[in-house]
Length: 376
Image (cartoon, rainbow, N blue to C red):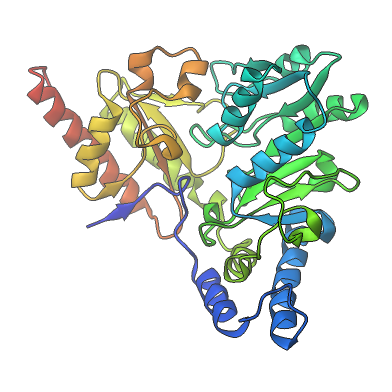
């Protein structure tokens, strides 16, 4: 039996999103920029989706810029802020997604100063530490809302308030927060927020950047001037329709009892297990844990053979042998960081999946320890 438990990497598409995407592909056949009836029909789909997303996240419709996903959204925001500055200071958390860390590091290589603020033992980067890192020449502060590996929720509002008083631009990566944490873009009053459809049961390859009124965007790839000259390229109409239809379809808070039961059983069966960020506020569906002495990738392959889809560290870096930068930033050593496994529950998962995974983990651990000549 195959069991999918990697919903932070991508959430299985919900039926409503599949239906909306299929209908848009079939009926909205025109280019949204065309003036004829077919183009106008496609434009209505995009505009209706824009209104729905804006209402869901608490922003004006004009603030929504549709993109290919969270990575592009983050890059557009970063590029826009820094395109008018030859130098300056940047602040981010050390646990940001590579879609934020890598473009910031590229800017650091080009001469910008970069401060990466490490989290505490609980996986949370304190607002005080972020604020202390800000200088007079700070151009941009980047802080994710929910960490994709640990699920730890970050104190974005406090940092944003401090930056707002000083006119410093703020980018919030809310890709893992959409549908899992309360989002109110206007109340948060940040400059940018990135979102992605496939994390909530929508299609892959579509996302959005929310932009505060009055903040100017610099296009990454100039072209036909779509999205009000902020992101050129013909809009992905079926994807955008599916994104809109997926909003609110998955109640991730419903998976808290499953996650908690899974962790309790795991601690009972393997007492030395370490649950990451279990003492911090975190997303309801996420469990990141360490089995000391086990290699996470090897354990993942054993679970894969048993029919389980889980992750070792960040799913977007799953093809690499590097240790989790999130766990390293939390102060864990390389061996411990490599022993991590992430489970993220979602649509279709039940308590039976949690029970079965615990049994599979115990079996896999015993097998691997036996192969290494260690006592089970």
